[in-house]
Image 1 (cartoon, one colour):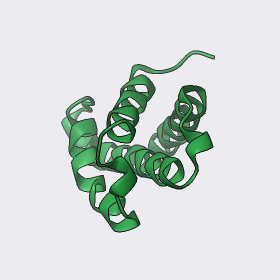
Image 2 (spheres, one colour; image 1 turned 135 degrees about the vertical axis):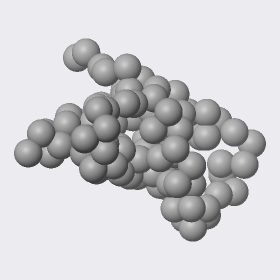
Image 3 (cartoon, helix red, strand yellow; image 1 turned 180 degrees about the vertical axis):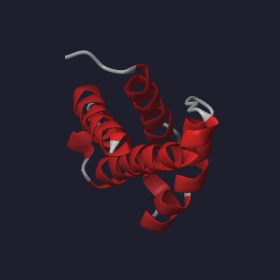
Image 4 (cartoon, helix red, strand yellow; image 1 turned 120 degrees about the horizontal axis):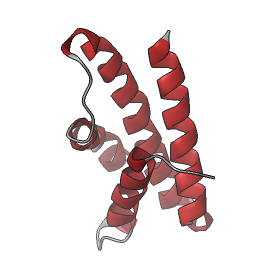
Length: 103
C-alpha cells in the first residue's frame, strides 16, 4: 500500500508522543486536550485555497481526530503500537476526509 506524506507525518507524530517519557502517564483527558495542538501541527503541513478554508477545517478535524484515536488506542492497548497498524489507520481516515471534503 502507498501512504500519503500526511499519513507518514501523522504516524511519526504519534510515535514521537508514544515513545516520550510521559506517554504512559497521560490520561484520556490529556490526550483529548492535545487535539488542538495536533490540529495546529497538521495545519502547518497542509494548505488549501482561501475559498476552501471550510473544507480544510473539516479535513484537518477528521485527521486530528484520527491521531487522537491512535493515541487513545496505543495508550490502552500496547499491541496497537505497531507502525503498520498506525499507518493504515491514519491513511484510511485521510482518505475518508478527502472524500468528505470533495462533497
